[in-house]
Length: 254
Image: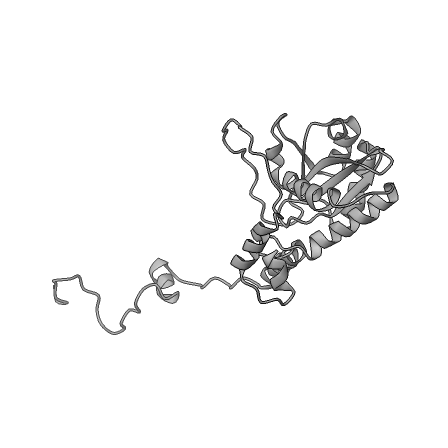
């Protein structure tokens, strides 16, 4: 909240915002469950956009009581949400069609991380990933935090959108969820991104990569040997010309 107010031009103190935040009981209470302590899963180091996408499903219901499902897609590096597919029934073929629309807009990912649900383990989805050259990474059963980025996103989606809205029908749900997704990508700052939005972080990384690619490397310094090469690059003092080379403690005559 302090980050959002600061971005909108309000000069507020973070301690005052936190005090009012606690007085109004705005914090979402989270139940602390006893869990066994296990080592953190070894995940790939994400350094660029489209390196790995996380996939998962979220369930809710409309006013009539009919259940709906949402396919969430999250870029693990930029924390962007390219799309949220909302429907009554989402099978493996609809999952692949939704991913194809995202690929047309921003390119294909190198890998997809998901659970072992039937939509992600079907022969159609596995064959689709092989056809597009995308590695499919299935997490271990009962270990949702091995796909932690999308699990964290689903928690925000639940608290900030699903629990805060009343969906009249499936069309109303699609419109409200899409508006929240646009706000999440373009207006909501993240502390893990240095209080930048996912779109701002992705743009900064893209500009940095473009500048690095446009800057040609400096040509190597030609040298006749190892000693002259070191002197040419400034790592050794220049040798005096006109004076004979002598060992320490000996005269030039010997």
